[in-house]
Image (cartoon, rainbow, N blue to C red; front, side):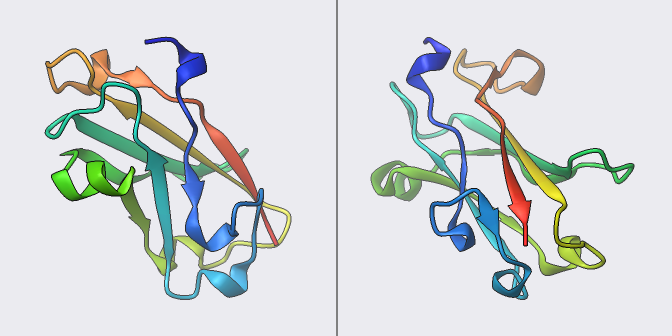
Amino acid sequence: MALDDLQGPDIEEAGGTGVLPLSKVTAGATVRLPVWPAARVGQAVWISCQFAGSDASSLRVRSGAPLTKGELQNGYALGFIGPEYFEGCSPGARLQIRPSVSVDGKGMERTALAFPALEWLIQ
């Protein structure tokens, strides 16, 4: 599978833009990873996020949970960033989302296919 075939993640509260208003994440944020060519129920999915240039550790939004039938039918693997992750965040910060999927049947992150990482400007 070529990287050109893969779509990067989206944050529902960003409304399809590259800007994420803090006012929209008071209850957290939903990360959506569009399903990939040849997606199958049971494939392990990892999603992590981190503020760019930050010393803060990355947050595991999804830790290898298998793709569900419902997610496959809806067209998205999902993850959730709790509201506490945004506490102390200032406008101008950049949030990076990095997903990966096990497409080799091993279910291991070290052999997973890395999807394009994307970034949102916090406003």
